[in-house]
Image (cartoon, rainbow, N blue to C red):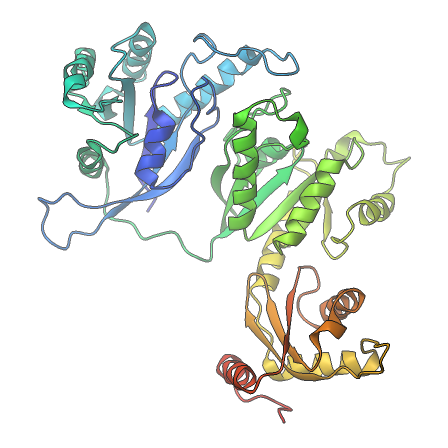
Length: 483
């Protein structure tokens, strides 16, 4: 059963993003005093507990709540032009289209107003729009910024719109939030829902500005889920979009386009950059979008280094392939070029696509599932020991003092990423160049050919060795070849 959908709408600077973050109990949407920070529909699945007056044991409900851009944002006072002179008013139509879509698809609409500022002409415009779209019966008015009792009369002015008495809350302090959550529980349809499956794959799509991330998201989702614009830096928040391909459910995370940190225009761009890093951390697989029409940049290389640092399964996605002359440039040329430019990701698969023309997308999603499965694979302890011993026998690390490297025991201790502990006599012998050689050979011999492997070298201690052996027996049965 689909989750109940809740949209948060209102004019700029009424605290919609703060309200979403308060309901979600985490930082989902960027909060900044400047108008127009939120542009896309930013969603979060949250759990709403049953009101205290319901029968004991009534389970909570899961709902999907969506923050939207401020209506009339570029009519309001604020920064109309970005740091390169692009007219941001050009985004107004797209932002308002996303707001209208959220209204039409929602079971409940939280119409948020600034309780301290009183009713404004923009509030009246939004109220009129809600009535015109036959949404009045789904509206729950909310007067935000009611930090104390003295502001309540001002917040109640919103009752004049005819949507009922507004709930007076403060997203900043949490005042009145329990009443709001109880009202959400009462107004959302359907029975309680099961949480999303832990097996649902999360895909983060990262890349420099204007590489086509939002276009790819919309193409995968089959709808205009996020705003696509020639204006660089349109996407600020990290936007989760759920969709299915051939019956397989996944979540794609659109992220802000990246440029050099010294070029950041303001705090919002700084926050967006760190949201992008958080998205990488929570993703199962990352798609690194490379623009086929431009050279690999320092930003692309920095992102590649970050993906290696976080041990993330990565697909190098060459987008906009429809714009290149295939008579002059062959895919083989790209393969050699990317291998040279993105050092350290030589194991990552490369997929050529055109997000705009829907070319190569089935191969892309199939590859994402393949990497997800590789990252979740667990090697048997016996087989792992046999493989590593054979690699060492063929070529072991060299020592100036003639010390011979020995493997005492090997076991895989976790997945996502696959983490392998090697108990050896001298860990220092395995560091540096030999570690890279060992990782490459392990990818050839084990079921981790296209993903990063984390290897930990530990010196023998009797207690730790016994503990690792017991853990290996629990994971894969009796240890073959154990001395």
